[in-house]
Image 1 (spheres, rainbow, N blue to C red):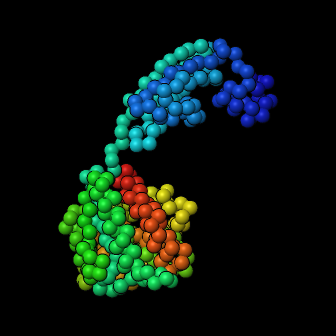
Image 2: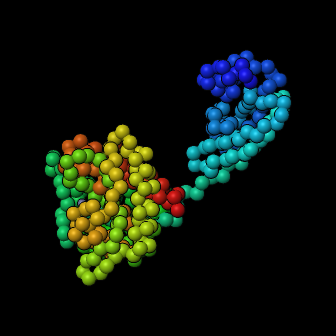
Image 3: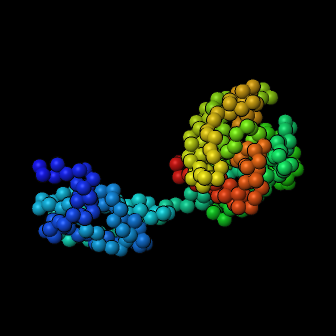
Length: 310
Ligand SMILES: [Zn+2]
């Protein structure tokens, strides 16, 4: 061991992990790893060793048994872990019955609120003239069918693109449906580009009503992070993230304490500024077919990420 200490660390690691330096077979142990379903990535002590079924060679075994952790990962299945003691010359077999992760949208009720027109605003528009109201509606319809196909119940806050619905009424529709979450789809007007998420970070008052409740504030805040990360995993490289912010950072929220749709909400509520529509690049993204598909997948990933976090 003293001699090894003089070796560069990288060489030492290579010996331990990959066995690229000749190692006597007496120091090897093997583990036959199989799983159902097959094709899972196999890691031993964090190092990738191949896909199941395969026989993994551990070259760092010694005459004394030493504990190793075997991990199997397959998308859509729970990560599987097993500790195994190995000594040089041993052969062991591991079988993993992988447990399917629950479909995160199955049985959920999602309220989609395509922003505008409301009592306060008709929404913004892009440099080429496309309206925010139109884009919110287009994405909402595509998202609705995507979520329904994944087993969710979808409640929409309006039934036609130009239907005027007050922000208070939008929240009431989500409440009456007992939605697991209300997502309010908007496009921003700003000097930069990208998507951002807003959640009620404190109570506000509108029409003499103070809300939302502490529990809705906490649940909305807890939803915002996972939702943002889910969106980012899809939009990365296409639309930059502009972060997660409190309602109080918005113009209306700074005056009322929270957005009106949040004040009246009794379910977790997020406002999603999908893009900055006043930015030509973002406008081109969301008016294009592939951009729309990506945005819908991003919103779906946000919901899945949120429901998985519960
Ligand atoms: Zn808007």
